[in-house]
Length: 198
Image 1: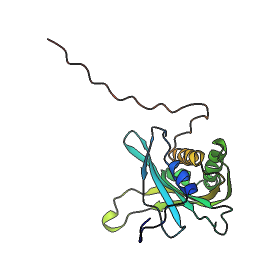
Image 2 (image 1 turned 120 degrees about the horizontal axis):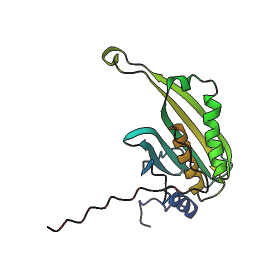
Image 3 (image 1 turned 135 degrees about the vertical axis):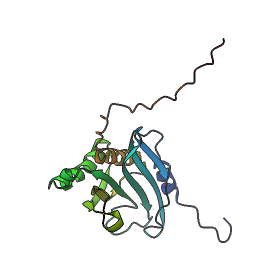
Image 4 (image 1 turned 90 degrees about the vertical axis):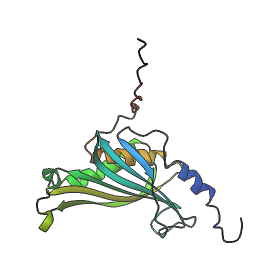
């Protein structure tokens, strides 16, 4: 290390960060590295995702991993995951009083289904209605669901937590999760036909 260089991140954080981008995800989901907030913990990393059906983007989200070797109040450990999911919803769904508890259960059931061990989970479910006015008066009314949550993973391997977050995003987009014993089939690349010899 030379002067002015920040110290290398702890090995535990580096190992966890390697599992934030799993090798396999459902074909409806596109993952990308995104900048992580720097003020929440000494070390952080983040991944963003979009859920697509055909060319339509149905949901977006981000998952942030925070690491503080000393822990922080309420974390119950040195790691914390912060998740955000936003998806368009039909207006009649967003007026259902059970939407909040049901959407929250999508997260906790997905964590449990993937065997993700966690503690100190908390969050909010928000319904948003957007109406246009003035020059945007002709825009259609849109309704959205937003879920924000955080929890403390009890292991460095974040793979089951990422899988649960991906399932949560798919559920918010109206796509059911795959059963635990079923693997996602990825579309094969199209093969070009061999040129025909005259």
